[in-house]
Length: 275
Image 1 (tube, rainbow, N blue to C red):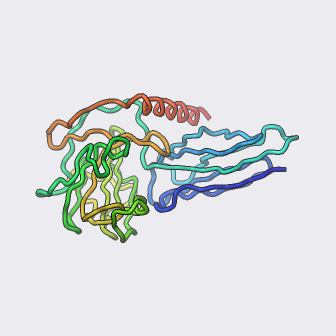
Image 2: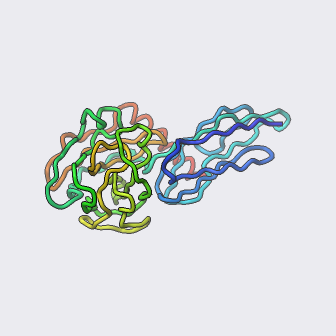
Image 3: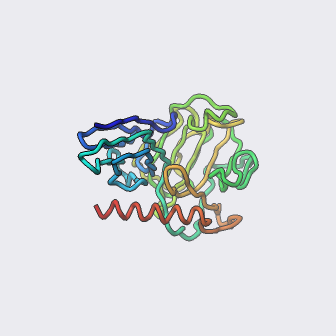
């Protein structure tokens, strides 16, 4: 006998879909990725007489269909319960050690006004997970360019609305690249239908990725850019960016909270590899 009450993740971005498969002695969660190939997921649940045989932090590792959780009954003679399972995900993977500072190209041609930089008070404040981001005001339709060579691992272009509204934080058009040192870069608030690359494309610095817009959580048409790596399904760390040889404001490793989360994620990934 068992009790199963399922839950889900936040609505909005369609990148990750999770399907539940109920077995005689447990439950499996299978993840399918549609508009991305690199995500990190965190799985939680209220468990009685069941255990998740997989680590609670799962890396898609480029896969678009994979087992995200596998709860199995412990005592076959006793009832088991799995209640309120949840999954959270973020684009990207984790890095235990940050790579050396590299030079990035500005993700556009010409000159545009910087309306918010790193540690900005509107949405780049400490704890926002956008601490090292840049926002440039620019007309919709402006070409958005790759800041470094990379591979396209995330795209979205179906959003049409933009406003200063918390409900729109996950309703944003974007391109995400993965770079050869393990860092990721994101190009956000693109116009509807304004993405010009597809998943798996290899791009070079200066190549057009799409057109700027005004979608998602935004006060005016602009381009949001940052570089980052991902800790788990709820946490990522941004890194300072150096444009065209200019030194970034600072270059530091993770703080203690992030360092601990990175190590836990690293241990979880090693456990996956060992299976």
